Structure formats: structure tokens, C-alpha cells
Amino acid sequence: MRKLLVTGAAAIAMAGAGVLVATPAEAASPVQIYRVYYDSPGSDTGSNKSLNGEWVQLFNTSQTSKNLKGVKLRDRTGYTYTFGSYTLKGRRSVYVHTGKGSNTATHRYWGRTWYVWNNTGDTAYLLYPSGRLADKCSWGRGGSSTYC
Image (cartoon, rainbow, N blue to C red; front, side, top):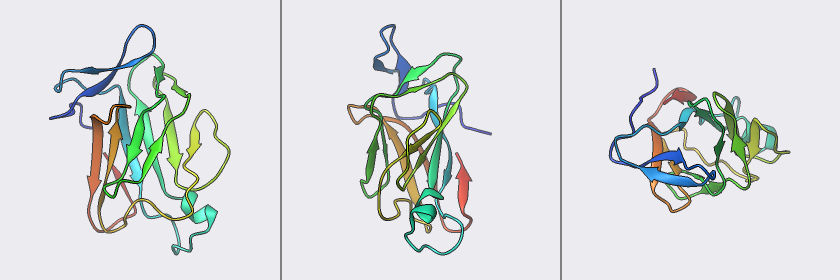
């Protein structure tokens, strides 16, 4: 099951006006990295379909909507996706795909032309607009996805 505490990092919380604020390091982030599909099905051809088979699922554990504007998703190398104006409803997921596509309420597209997540091991970081860590998920060799 999903870890409930983010150790050694600040968590995401919402202030009354919908602005992201830091909370104590022991607090759980309401928006968490739930799953990373780092090895898209088939050969890594670089096609848009293959790129979009690589994704990160974020889940809002709270009952209320969370504004993710300025929140960043980053890999160990430093490739970074930044949310524009976007609100994730309570108890809902959003998938951030590596390739190109049309953004919807449940699927966002990075617009990259090559892969982000390393099949041999990597770390996905969820960051505040300030760059402070909210959550992270790591994996090693083997498999095609990991639950965080």
C-alpha cells in the first residue's frame, strides 16, 4: 500500500485561497505519486504512441480539489514538467504522459520527443513551485512500472 508520510520533505497543502503552501515535514502530501509506468509496452521506438505509454499517475488523497499550478514533476536527470493552470479534483488521478496530446482533466501531456523515465532505475520527484520536495518514487531494474 502507498506510504502515508513524506519523510524529510515538506508536503503539499492548500491554503484557503487555493495557493500551495508548505506544511511540516512529517505531514502527508494530499497529492502523491501513485504509480510510474517507466517502460512503455513494446520497443522504445520514440513514436508518440510509445512515448505516451510512459506516464506518471498522481492521486489526490483528499476529498477537496487541489490547485497544482506551478507544481513540478521531475526525473533524476532534471527533465521537468510544470503544471499550468490545473485543478485536480478530490479522490481523483491525473496521468502525466511523456509524449504529445491534448490535455484533459485526467490526462496531461509533457510534449517531449524522447523518453524521460529510465528503465534501469530512476526517481520521480513531485516538487512545489519553489522547488521543495513534496513526494518522490524510485525504482530499479526490472519490470515496467512501480506503485509508489
